[in-house]
Image (tube, rainbow, N blue to C red):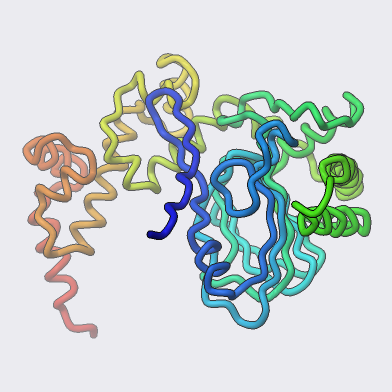
Length: 348
């Protein structure tokens, strides 16, 4: 019997569950021999498991070599920690928060905790790629980062690094010879796992990598943006995720649970929601559900109206029909028929 894959960790807060990268396509590529893969991990990520007491916070550290054209790519995903990726050779499509980048050899990507991103569009390219995922203990943009105890940067340097990583949205940078050297040394340690003591070497090179990263960010000096770590930013990201994720829309939200998801009280949450959308939280949620339902009525003509209503989070078809008519000026079936008629009309 095949061994079951470990379940991705979950973060539960405010009645909501956050799911992170399943690594499914990557695992399949490794199993099929499409890439050469080496990694160390804590938790669910693929790779050799490290004891919990060894370098806590390093959830994944490794590299892969992909030769020739690939027929797979990573799905849109989030990581519980900051992810630093270095493309040593090759070219790679990279998408973060809907923005597309064509990575070149020597590029460095930095994604913040729980930031939506993926490699591949839809497939990755050939190349040698290194990564580090480091959990700094946050689940919302406004929370303070907590670095692991093995990080030995001077307090002022660590604060500067934290600020530079938190206070900008620029995801792609140029690496430096020092960064390339650090990742090469870390790759060697990972490949020697199980053949000797490597923890001290890993700790030294990880600290050197963080210091080299700070120096690179200083040189490329993006303007700091304090708005990225405000409570309003937390609400903004949540509302966008709510609108774009049908699974989230189907949740039976209350004002309390919406606010708790963002780690704040209902009054403060409602104020931020009104400021961002000019709607109350409940009005915004209903608006998102109706927009998604209208899209499904257009694109899924064989799906029953009641099924669509329930899938989108409405508790009854009657309430859905009333809200739909108020929003779009007609009943759901009339909306679907109008769409069908417009499709049937010949193009002039």
